Image (cartoon, rainbow, N blue to C red; front, side, top):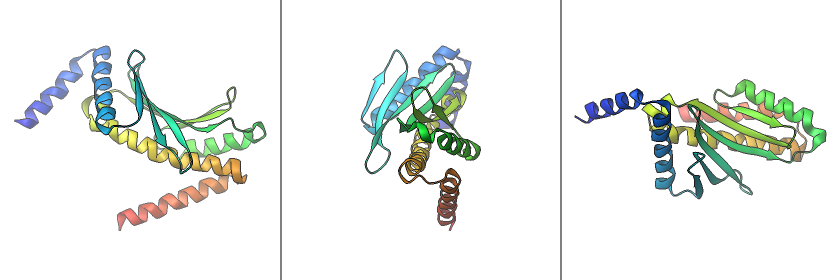
Length: 181
């Protein structure tokens, strides 16, 4: 009986127009944040949530979760006010990340001097599978910490982007080996 109810609920969600679908996913997203008790603010008219999470041992950052134009999006700034003289290296590191990221992308805003990590997903998946919202929040958060660390290493240690990416790939491969054993 539960399976039938679940199936009918998903079929019902598919029959709704885009505005109603966005509202349903928005309610699901708010419910996740409310249940988790995260330090966050809900902006109802714009359909986004700003949550503060620890991105490194020394730093917190604002994460944004949005519903609009048929998409669910997660965003976070991974670097603020970068030195102008490192612009080329920042673009190189961002390009390396964009080449290896299976989800999301790195955006460099030259005018305002920041780097942002964004994941964007069509609304259909979280509409049908509400667990996808939390999964994407967790994945975005975990990935953002690695990206943040890489950009900090570029700025603080002046390490070459290729070496930073190679070290990160090596670290991720090691983690995969330990998870699979």
